[in-house]
Amino acid sequence: MFARVLSSCVLGALVFVIGGCDEAAPPPGADATQSKAAVAVATAESLAHPPAKNPPEQAASGLGTAVDNLPFQATGDKLASIAWRTWVYTDTGPKRTRFGYLRAGAVVDRRGPVIHNDGCAGGWYRVNPRGFVCIGHGATTDLQHPVVLAHGRRAERGQGLPYLYALSRSRPPHLYFKLPSEANMKQVEGGFRSNARRWLGWLHAHDLQDMLDVQTELPDHLNRPLTKPYGVKKPLRFATHAGKASPDSGFAILSTYKKGERFFGLTTELDWIALDRTRLVEPSSFHGVALDADESLPVAFVKNHSHPKYKRSEDGQLHAVGAYAMREGIKLTGEVMRVAGTFWETRDGHWVPQHGLRMVKARTKFPSVATGTRKWIDVSIRRQTLVAYRGEHPTYVTLISSGRGLLGDPEKVPSTILGTFMIHSKHVSSTMDGADDKSDSFNLRDVPFVQYFHKGYALHGTYWHDDFGRVRSHGCINLSPVDAAWLFEWTDPNVFPDWHSTLNKERGTVVHIHP
Image (cartoon, rainbow, N blue to C red; front, side, top):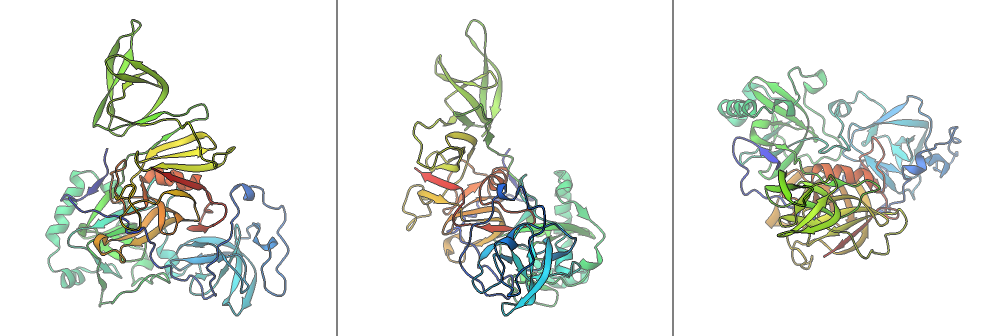
């Protein structure tokens, strides 16, 4: 089933494309001096067996050491992120580099003694599983801080979209900094009740209440003007709101509340938005095919809305026994039968006609990176397919949406760059905007499971379209939510639990992109 952008009216021709896939400018997460260099972070395997004892305390100089960056036994002491990005550093000295960052609301183990130096007046703490965080604008030891409490819901990993998402309608929502009263809403928006009632009726008609997980009692910490995470852009503020969102915005929602007849969502940037001014996003149900150790290519995906399934009788005749759905993935044995056309045998004992299938066949040659059990990703622009390999064995096969310019020059048209690259940074979610590309303006908050492999080019999940298998983006490789979540956990570098990002320019998974 195709993903729907849920509303009382049709999304129509609204097209969001990742303009150069550029990431919005990163705000600082601490007062400390920041280095642009990134260093290799430990993989999950290297942390599987932490030391039996806590490592020695830090030297009196206050400089971290390699020993200090090993995991330590938790004591119950915590610190929390109160910035859009709270950087985790390799060291506390002037030559420190970055491991990654925490997102506002994240709570992690800390260990002293606290280190004070010119780079961090508030003091440095070691955090698990490695690295150092500066207490200040980006982090706090006060777990009751308003930003920490407001970000009670964390991004979900491994299943699909990490948040509930919504897209602006033609009349976009206002960005309230406190849940507004009816008087506030009437003053700011004028008449709103009729639209709210239509939206509520539509919600019930489509039986979509469970998407919202609506709460009616507002916790005390949300019943006041909200403090923005450090580093979030603060636009012009009016008495009760910060203006309207742009008509091409996408929002990630932490929680939803009902006030009177109206539903509101609290965004990750801690703005309140009226959901009847948005289209809720029902995630795409499409996903790829996982292959077991004893399975291999070919795999096929259905191109039509329905595709016949046959069973072969003892006399060799084919009899229709059902149908495959559009874009359904089918594991094939490689056996072919030609009877009034070409038919492929499926691994569950059926036969399927080749006509109407998008085939992903076994490779006859492999690039040099396909050695041993090394992970690498194979992307075909013409076929719009992605295969995740370990050495020469495929483990996952799916459809993608690459740049609309197909095989054109990426400097001139919106195409995906060709070549062999390495994933150098991963983000559970990251805001992207099209400020540098006026023809494709958008403002997409929290694009899910972003993996940069070359400049602004990335693999990432997509919540604003469901055209996987066809070109669609401005250069990035778009994946369905389920596929993006799976690939994010499979690739290197590993993003630790409670972290939002990891940087690694030396040991990331290889991405091989070819025609």
